[in-house]
Image 1 (cartoon, rainbow, N blue to C red):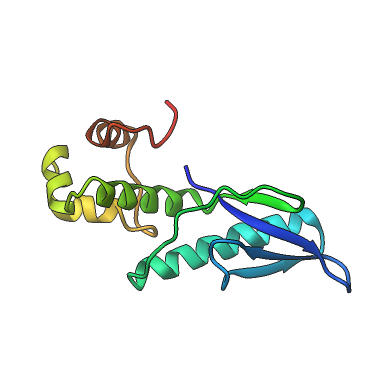
Image 2: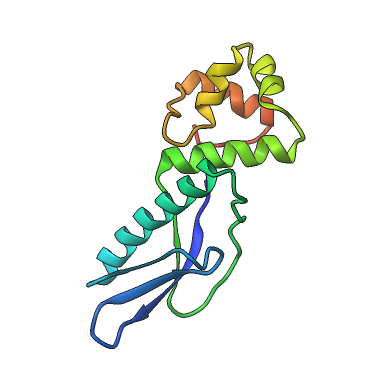
Amino acid sequence: MIAYPAKFEKAAEGGYVVEFIDIPSCVTEGDTLEEAKAMAKEALSAMLYSLDSRKKNIPDPSNKKGKGIYYIEPDLKIAFAITLKKERKRMGLSQKEVAQRLNVNWTFYQRIENPRRTNPTLGTIVKLQNVFNRQFISL
């Protein structure tokens, strides 16, 4: 789905400091690499949800490589809702237009794009993949 590059650096006092390259205000830390990765996922999820709920621009993930760079995926619900919204906007469609193509009511579709409320069925995901001509999950 989506994953953002994060720079993991060893801290002088031990542990790791994590900074997201595309979202500089998203920073966290952990005592071990595994803990830092878990904290990074939590921080990224919270930041993306916050940006979305405040209707702020959510940057696309860049394609950075290098020492200490790991790609972090946000929570699945948040990743799904944000990917869906970005794809809809890329195609120039409104929520109402997508709802009509899915043959569902507009409020139902709004919930699908809400990172905290999304919970589409497998059938709905298949319909969405047909509307957007794109795979959101591998079936």
